[in-house]
Amino acid sequence: MAGIAGIARQDAEKEVNEMLEALNHRGTTKRIVRTEDTTMGIIWHDDEKESITGCLKKKSVGYEHGPGHYAFVIEENGRLILRRDELGVSPLYSGYDKTGSVCFSSEVKALLPIAENITEIPAGHKHNDKQAEQLFRFKQPPSFSEDPGLIAAELRRKLDGAVKDCITTNEVGAWLSGGLDSSVICALASKYIRNLKTFTVGLKGAPDLKFADETARFLKSDHREIIVTNDDLIRYIPEVVYYLESFDALLVRSSIINFIVAGEASGYISEAFSGEGGDELFAGYEYLKRIPCGQLDKELIRITGKLHNTALQRVDRCASAHGIVTHTVFTNPEIVRYAFTIPAEFKIHKNVEKWILRKSMEGSLPEGILNRPKAKFWEGAGVKELISEYADQKITDHDFRKERELPNGWLINTKEELYYYRIFREHFGQDTDLSWMGRTDNSPVS
Image (tube, rainbow, N blue to C red):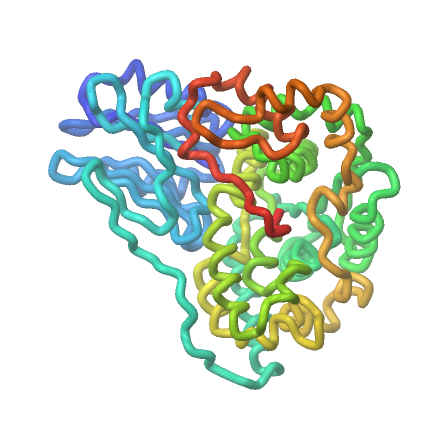
């Protein structure tokens, strides 16, 4: 995905170029845009050119990455206006340099050398240096239908259209875990992409390898299976922490596999479908079954609203690190809005999670895939507690007690997280203000 950076002052071309250097993995072509009071820059890949040129003509920087996914910055009346899409699929951060000028970037690593008071632009907001205006607010609209058959058919139609809208070339592939969400997207994409390329990563014997192979055979996709070892997982951690800009244990753990599959896929495709977002919209997590039906929508809205700096950040950073543009179909605004009109009793029905999504795809996937229970990304890939056990060997109980409280008052939860934090500190420093960093909560949503 493209990257943007800038400073709200004239003659800052040198600094903005340095910021873009930190975003080199996000593109191959750069452009500096100068306005009366601002120096802005953008970096992009060739297949994103169409979405970039429109912004450049308006003396702004930004991009629309699929329907409703965008980050956009423009100068209006001498003031920078920063806008971010509804779910925060496209990243955007801001801060202030030593002159007090507003700075912004798609990633924190470009801001850290020059800015302080770095914050994440909230998803669905329009922001300037004085105030933030919320343009989008999650809410549950009234249900349009009580007939599950009609709902499933309409959901299938909308998902199909959202997938089709993302396809501009046969060079779009897919990350396929063999779980329901990624399999749904692959099944729909295979109708429009001849010889769809799919990619799966896991340790030998991992469940995802088996289920992904079953889906790929059913869809007749051009499938590549990447087997990794324990040593591979450990070896990739420093890179993952750097690109992810996080030491959150669950997020890093799930990102390692994502990072590896993105790297493998980048040798064959420039764009990839991802199934991210399906669990939040359609109630895919086991703990949700314990929530009373009348309260389920409230919890789904809550966890969907947390995607921007957790799971969607994982997808963005892992893909961008390898020059891949991703399509997270479930986060298409039309899909999100429709999902929240579906009655909760059709999301968890007869104790089956994502029941309505499964019903919408009947006949289009193997029964074993259609009925596969949810597995966390790192569990399905076979990672389990391997990294946690490795960290236990590297960090003593004494060191954990001594180092677990961070300068900002946060507490490190586990030795695994402390292991990641030590690497994070090497990349970004110990005194970094972490108010921009998201952390997963205690509910099993990773």
